[in-house]
Length: 101
Image 1 (tube, one colour):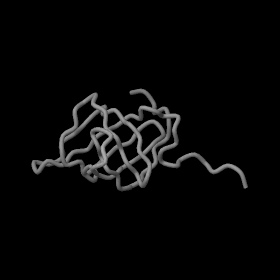
Image 2: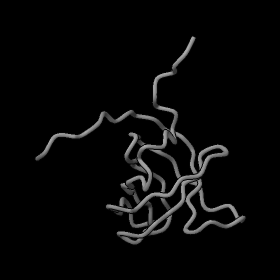
Image 3: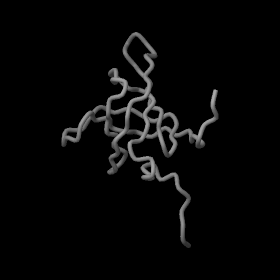
Image 4: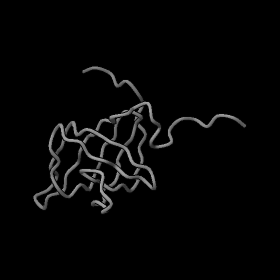
Protein backbone atom coordinates (compact mmCIF):
# COMPACT_ATOMS: atom_id res chain seq x y z
CA UNK A 1 0.00 0.00 0.00
CA UNK A 2 1.50 3.32 -0.98
CA UNK A 3 1.49 6.22 1.49
CA UNK A 4 -0.87 9.15 1.05
CA UNK A 5 0.53 12.12 -0.78
CA UNK A 6 -1.18 14.63 1.49
CA UNK A 7 -2.86 14.76 4.87
CA UNK A 8 -6.61 14.33 5.10
CA UNK A 9 -8.70 16.57 7.33
CA UNK A 10 -11.83 15.17 8.95
CA UNK A 11 -14.62 17.61 8.26
CA UNK A 12 -18.37 17.30 7.88
CA UNK A 13 -19.40 20.07 5.52
CA UNK A 14 -22.63 20.31 3.49
CA UNK A 15 -22.21 20.21 -0.29
CA UNK A 16 -24.46 20.14 -3.31
CA UNK A 17 -23.72 17.54 -5.92
CA UNK A 18 -24.41 18.47 -9.56
CA UNK A 19 -23.75 16.38 -12.64
CA UNK A 20 -23.39 19.44 -14.87
CA UNK A 21 -23.21 23.20 -14.60
CA UNK A 22 -26.87 24.17 -14.23
CA UNK A 23 -28.83 26.74 -12.32
CA UNK A 24 -30.96 24.08 -10.62
CA UNK A 25 -29.54 23.03 -7.23
CA UNK A 26 -28.48 19.40 -6.99
CA UNK A 27 -28.99 16.97 -4.11
CA UNK A 28 -27.28 17.53 -0.77
CA UNK A 29 -24.49 15.33 0.57
CA UNK A 30 -21.71 15.98 3.07
CA UNK A 31 -17.97 15.56 3.29
CA UNK A 32 -16.39 13.01 5.62
CA UNK A 33 -12.79 14.03 5.04
CA UNK A 34 -11.12 16.44 2.69
CA UNK A 35 -7.71 17.11 1.16
CA UNK A 36 -6.48 19.47 -1.50
CA UNK A 37 -6.60 16.78 -4.19
CA UNK A 38 -9.79 14.99 -3.19
CA UNK A 39 -12.72 14.41 -0.90
CA UNK A 40 -14.71 11.52 0.58
CA UNK A 41 -18.46 12.11 0.57
CA UNK A 42 -21.20 10.55 2.66
CA UNK A 43 -25.00 10.66 2.45
CA UNK A 44 -24.92 10.37 -1.34
CA UNK A 45 -28.44 9.24 -2.30
CA UNK A 46 -27.84 8.08 -5.85
CA UNK A 47 -25.09 6.02 -7.48
CA UNK A 48 -22.34 7.94 -9.22
CA UNK A 49 -20.66 6.62 -12.37
CA UNK A 50 -16.99 5.70 -11.94
CA UNK A 51 -14.88 8.09 -13.97
CA UNK A 52 -17.78 10.52 -14.25
CA UNK A 53 -17.47 14.21 -13.52
CA UNK A 54 -19.49 15.97 -10.84
CA UNK A 55 -19.54 19.57 -9.68
CA UNK A 56 -19.46 20.17 -5.95
CA UNK A 57 -20.86 23.36 -4.53
CA UNK A 58 -19.68 24.45 -1.08
CA UNK A 59 -21.13 27.78 0.00
CA UNK A 60 -20.80 29.97 -3.12
CA UNK A 61 -17.82 28.04 -4.57
CA UNK A 62 -18.01 25.37 -7.25
CA UNK A 63 -15.36 22.91 -8.41
CA UNK A 64 -15.20 19.91 -10.75
CA UNK A 65 -14.32 16.46 -9.41
CA UNK A 66 -13.89 13.00 -10.94
CA UNK A 67 -15.52 9.98 -9.28
CA UNK A 68 -12.77 7.46 -8.41
CA UNK A 69 -14.74 5.04 -6.20
CA UNK A 70 -18.19 4.47 -4.71
CA UNK A 71 -19.51 2.15 -2.01
CA UNK A 72 -23.13 1.32 -1.25
CA UNK A 73 -23.69 1.42 2.52
CA UNK A 74 -27.28 0.34 2.92
CA UNK A 75 -30.12 -1.29 1.00
CA UNK A 76 -31.99 2.03 1.22
CA UNK A 77 -29.46 3.43 -1.25
CA UNK A 78 -26.97 5.51 0.74
CA UNK A 79 -23.51 5.68 -0.80
CA UNK A 80 -20.06 6.99 0.00
CA UNK A 81 -17.90 8.25 -2.84
CA UNK A 82 -14.28 9.21 -3.33
CA UNK A 83 -13.68 12.15 -5.63
CA UNK A 84 -10.47 13.58 -7.08
CA UNK A 85 -10.21 17.28 -7.87
CA UNK A 86 -9.92 18.23 -11.54
CA UNK A 87 -7.93 21.29 -10.38
CA UNK A 88 -5.97 20.31 -7.24
CA UNK A 89 -3.95 23.55 -7.25
CA UNK A 90 -7.15 25.48 -6.43
CA UNK A 91 -7.77 25.75 -2.66
CA UNK A 92 -11.51 24.95 -2.84
CA UNK A 93 -11.88 24.10 0.87
CA UNK A 94 -9.71 26.87 2.30
CA UNK A 95 -7.11 24.43 3.69
CA UNK A 96 -4.05 26.55 2.92
CA UNK A 97 -2.67 28.42 5.92
CA UNK A 98 -3.50 32.11 5.97
CA UNK A 99 -0.74 34.35 4.75
CA UNK A 100 -0.03 37.92 5.66
CA UNK A 101 -0.70 39.61 8.98
